[in-house]
Length: 393
Image (tube, rainbow, N blue to C red; front, side, top):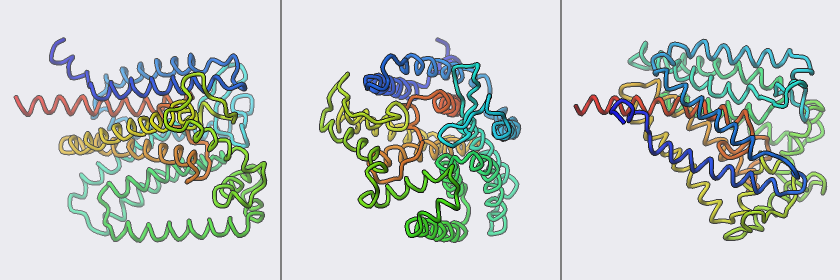
């Protein structure tokens, strides 16, 4: 292997990826043992998605960060157009699932893709460009320039969020808003503006939650029948003791599954507690039942190592590529919110939403979009290695 080829071998990222793939396949294999998934082939399909994802990562290495910077505007616009096309598509191409029109799932193809998963990456990429461009234009920041940057970031995020809210996909919209909040903080905007914004958002959030808890029936009427189940989820999370047995059944089964694994779990083929979406939204319950507290802690440690890598890579690359650094920070925000929300709803500290555990949950869209983001991060790491080599020559 020559020196140029060695730049493309990022051992830490490769090892982390292999560990995540192993954890994903083991967890999904155990989920398949539940009766409702008899004769399913989730593991085989997940292997296919990961294989396609590796090809995506390899393809991205042919683009450098400067090219990604130049193309980011067009990539963002393409993502917005796909969301718009989804909304106007007939049901033969995009039929609603659980009241949400969030997937391209044509009847003539045995697959479905969720565009909102991919636009998370395209939006982060464009936000990184917006911040970098703004910082280059206004080298000395003040309240006026920071306010301009804040407005830019809000507009960039508001467009996809508006289209996703029209799909009645509240959970995914919250992911975008969390990423926006993190990017605002990490972009260096004045804390006077940030604290004011936090106060407004916290006040509005508290007011909405109070209204839902005190007047749940009225809240259901306001959001419409297609989103009424989201109010039920919030009420079940806020006060499960006051809800009907039907409303809390899923909630209780998830906790029963997670807790029944105890310290070391029941092992392979040992899952026994039935609940739906075990291979996707509630894969962490499968991990808890199969491998216990120890296995669950190891999975959380894997995420900690990935987040640590993203932080250190972003800080190290900032001097020669702010664009690459901001993308790493945005991708970190995406991983963080998915992990916190997914594991949090499994533990009962967050309301139940349809947010997968990235890199472990079964699903083509979530796997491929995450691999797309990892491909860009991998390219950032390659260019950081090249830069360090030139510096020490």
